[in-house]
Image 1 (cartoon, one colour):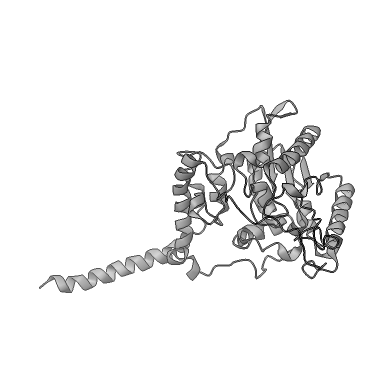
Image 2 (spheres, rainbow, N blue to C red):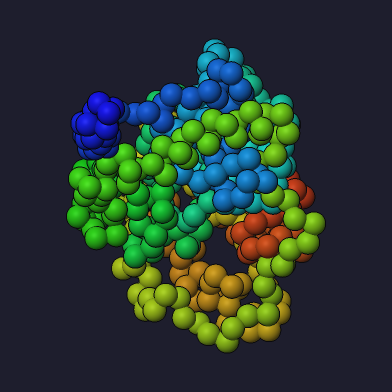
Length: 363
């Protein structure tokens, strides 16, 4: 008979504790839990950043940059005196969509066992799918603590329009980091842009953040599965090839003045690192199909891309920057499911050019 009256206070106390813990989680928002990782400790570091949405790939996308770096082999590699460390920055073409880690640009550079300045070149794949120079700057800014000897930035026109900079979910969900970049590099951008995700206090509670916490845990669990299989993305046996018959339109996001639309300030910040920094206009598919006289490919009308190349050439010449324009290096049949995703053979053509540039410009 005495158990029932005690049950109600117990339930009230339990509820109060749970509610308190839920809201107390707000106080942990500044703690870098992502740096706590099984990678490079119990399991090896990944050759590229985690990205993906399928269980079959033993991978997932998340917005915690600390966790992404902690899972990467770079975080667990002690730089030696004989290492010439090269960081590769870019989009999904650098990350390696449909390519194994060994087939990517970084993988092929490392397999070549090349030297630069009498040191062994070790390339690190810091590419991340989504196209945005601000995303690239955010990654490179954090990566600089790992002491690169050279940075290679592979980019394309779609990474440069100002209105596209926050379209990458990784950028939009790292509002504080973006604000820091704006002030640190004096970018022509608003720290209060509505596209930046600003969680309210309620959205910082444990209940609201449980998906984020679960993703950090899943990333660690996937580490063991990835380490035992080597699988970090799905490799379909059949996929839709990159489009070669194109729309009869010369529209490019409604832009009429390309020079006014591009984030040259972000590009300049990327190129201002205190080590040799090479800018590469990455290869792309050049169609010979329908309306190829209007557009080079699905992404670009000819007028916009031609003007973009002129802008890059003028910028790099005026500021004495290292630059390779490799836009037409790779034949159309060496692209896979996108106008910027290449086959292993296409990557080899690019790797040969990058090798030469590293050896020529090393310091």
